[in-house]
Image (cartoon, rainbow, N blue to C red; front, side):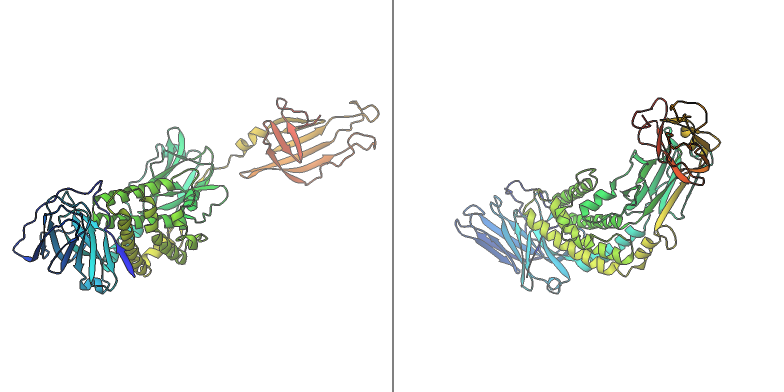
Length: 568
């Protein structure tokens, strides 16, 4: 099977074929040299020390002499980080430069044959910086070839996947279990926020740091993520996110982009917050509530993807500057996509690699391992989708090569990660011991009198008056009617009911303590049933201003009295 292996990222931007090159004189340690005269209409081949260079017809002017020098890799070669020297160094002189890409072919070294190394040819660009060039290796074949658009010098290198994986396993373990070491956040006047007996408590540990105070005239809760990974912070939906200070994403938006399922309890909202960042929440006056930080399955997926981007960036950095810069921009664009507040749709590049994780919602070791595999499988596809417009020589081949190398490295890391107990224990004990959630609880003492105050007063309905008193009692009295002429007068036909009120944080309940319906005249206007002693019902404000719902009836203030709402 043919594997295209391309330079990671630092390919120089090529706006045209480079005209010009640098002469390289053969050092004393030369393994071989060759020269050839370029003839119009014919390919030109140079071979020395088992390295072959082929210039296609038209690649150089007729009569130009091309020179190849092959040397061993000296101590001053200084290959890019992460790249091993796997073969000799080839230097090519061509006055006037290349008009068409040429091919350089090396013998396949043992490390490539046995699968230890992924081969890649590294070449110097016009500025003297290393860059990977499109490299082709036929599995099991005797040669490794590369296309070059500029003649200088280069060598056959290799990516040691096992070494990369070992290094990245350490990095990933530190990423999951490490701390940012952030400072304790400040919230202005913290004593003022606790006035009136307000209590705030939290779980132990240093995964999260927080403060609660009055800042800028409002109560705020700042929650800082002290981890290096992303975490999900959930809070009451009525609380507002203010002043940011963080790269955070809506959990629902992230779930849509990744094609996964977010579980958000009714009445709550949540954000995915980056490591070291702080989420600031404006807490409504008098409100109690709970804020929860956790390594949710969505936060875990985002953390895994962005770690994969880090590996991708390291690989591209090993290949040169241009593609590395493009990869950094691609990562930023993906972050902007996750941060979209509206219109975010599933990313097409993720459709296949995340579909198996679409219904995973519970954070446990099994699901976390599954999501890690799916997320890392997705990294090359995500980056490829964000790098469509990169302008480097043979960009498509290079991106495929990078994806192949990154995929191999992350697959190897994933195999090693499954045995690192520290990682999975950290996820399971976010809130301390075996609690996966870190909770912050704000409790405001309930003020029953303040809750009742908007209800106290006199309310009217056609034929009835409702009076609610501060002492938690209420009365309903009907008007008096004479059965013969329908006008007020003796005898007293007024219906009456008395109530006691119970006020709790969840609402107001009325209980009937006494009820009377003296209208015994069958011709009277109110022959229907009346309140029954012991009956209970909820008292609440209607959605319409100035309208109260009481025992199945609507009562209005004088100012808000409306025909058809509270009677004729």
